[in-house]
Length: 354
Ligand SMILES: Nc1nc2c(ncn2[C@@H]2O[C@H](COP(=O)(O)OP(=O)(O)OP(=O)(O)O)[C@@H](O)[C@H]2O)c(=O)[nH]1
Ligand SMILES: [Mg+2]
Ligand SMILES: [Zn+2]
Image (cartoon, rainbow, N blue to C red; front, top):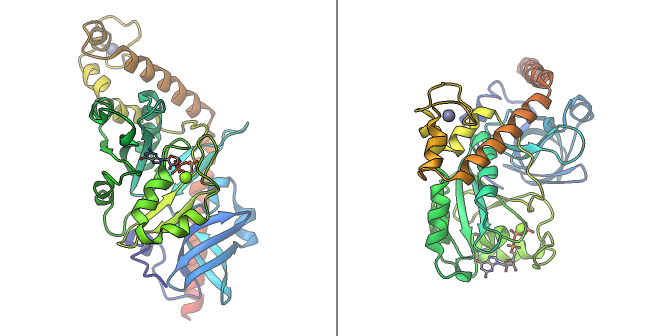
């Protein structure tokens, strides 16, 4: 049994179900595999499927429940539930799904903090960090950059400084091997908050989570396939509860992160470029070859790293392209769908209230 608060419930979700009690109860999606969902709820740990209506009504795969989602379910038998609908998401970490179609894939829903983990080896790459940060700022959750494996390098502080230079996000140094920095990381997660761990395979996401879980460590190791680098140790996205409070989601390392964000989101990832841009002659300056460009001037006099501006341009082009390809009508369909769900829910409440 869990209290809804322990699972991250709050007014945002409560307000979506106000009305007389129904046979439906709220539950949080903790995992998913081949159409079978694992739910955590006040009624305990349940296995669940989704109604045919939900499955067929989904216009996009992003409409289906994902790890971290709050859903309304009913009990089919004591340990088996059926998910009737997905509550509106407070935040969501997305990307463009790998493959041909330009479709949103939601990696985790309703998260407060995203721990972007990288390791202090050859893996450390400021350009990759920028890429992830764009997507994290877009999610609505707050990013924390975690530089792991500090035990393997001479001067971890140099890496921390480089990470701090390129972002507004918090930067933490950790070693899952020695336990250093793990307490500070734990303190970044408030009571009732949810965190997701993202980053390349092998950087130590699951190892850090094992440290956080403490005594519960066995259960995590048991579901891990192996430890070797290059292979994905974590097979699927999975939600876990910390003994001291807080919810965490482990994810397998991503091979690609195709961005899906509003182009204006660039400013949060490149505050330095933005700051210089205030001095450009033209307000819509793209900092390419316009006269009176303060950003180009900053690169020339060495106050802005040229690699940083090149990354900015590259990501800008990518976001513009993704925006052109994403179907505007899909967003409208999404709005209509939510309206329909809420109407349906109110109707049921009225019926049951009678
Ligand atoms: N030296 C050192 N090794 C570490 C540290 N953290 C993790 N490792 C090792 O790095 C390897 C990968 O760790 P995992 O925790 O499985 O990495 P992951 O990010 O969860 O990888 P995926 O699940 O594949 O995405 C393992 O062999 C860990 O023992 C660390 O702080 N220092
Ligand atoms: Mg893992
Ligand atoms: Zn300019």
